[in-house]
Length: 274
Image (cartoon, rainbow, N blue to C red):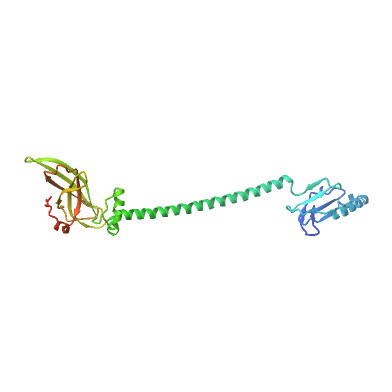
């Protein structure tokens, strides 16, 4: 049986036996309009029709709450105690509602995951860019430390504090080895070492100055060694060696350094070749 709401013209599919022999008052779930649906004419008697007319008048005048539900039609018995949903049972409505809630929750969860991944990716990119910038500055400070010390001499102690040689010459003296020997009855100090160009460009090799110092750090005597090469390419290293007869008795340390020809012109220290 198909019923049509007289107010909003919504159509409902109703089971044939839902009306009964006495007819039934129904209400539209869309606009809350109520009307009476009679049974087949051959089964309806006059007494029942009169009774149903009074009941319909009573139901029409009764306030109807504003309840929004899915398209369905509700039926009532005469005592208003028997309520039946023709299209949807309470269980099916709850199942549909839970299914919709679950679908929306899944969509929200997926959106939240995408947002979280996007946020994590953004934070990761910030850290990656920051680390790349720091690595770039650290590498530049390492490779161009000769130029940095030349412009900012006060940075030399900072490099020394972290174990790096940094000076304006771009050269480094390292691996100094000393040993005592005897040459025709004379005690001789033999010195071996290396010079390296740590700069990014070719450098002129300066003279190597070796100085004896006492326990107080005072220079007792010095001498100069000429390197075997006049120029060194970036990263290139050379060896040097020298000797000093009868070193001072109170000498405690041997300090290497570089000295220029201009500095040597004012120095009377004897120069010993390699």
